[in-house]
Image 1: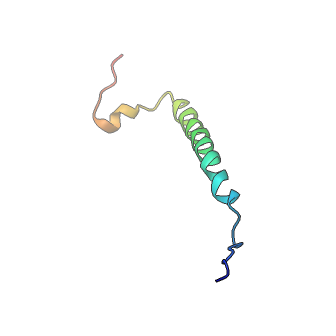
Image 2: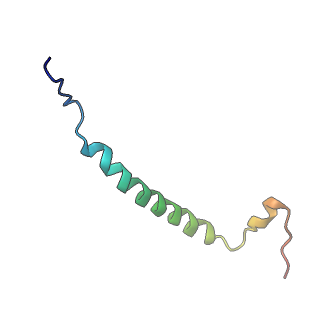
Length: 54
């Protein structure tokens, strides 16, 4: 029997996302953290029932 060769998708297309996606996800998380931390007037603890003390 002849070996079946699968050339439909190269193997590197499976390896690159394993390294790229965690870096991209951490960058997006840092962007969200920067945006949310820039809101000084909003009390995020009010969502959970905490009161702001001054």
